[in-house]
Image (tube, rainbow, N blue to C red):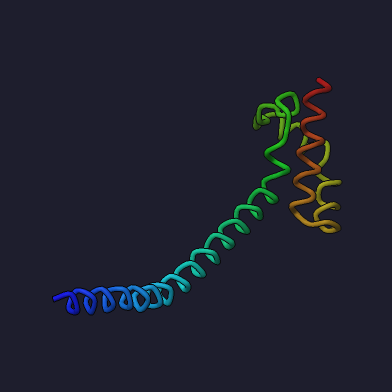
Length: 110
């Protein structure tokens, strides 16, 4: 009887070591996958913050309401030739930013 209890205890104890090894074989790849997923998410978040950093940190005084169609048209009559030169030299995005600045300055001046 005592020998059977001892044998059961030894078997149960040794099975714990076997189970621990099997669990470690399952857990290690799972933890590695989770670590890489966390790293990828962190890098994507950092990239989004870097891309949005210019737009996000503007003070309230710097932002202004959008220009109306009439204000844009008035600025277009004045700056159309220069806008076309800037498009050929720098591209549309740069020319659009330049035009937007000029139109806002024209609005502020009136």
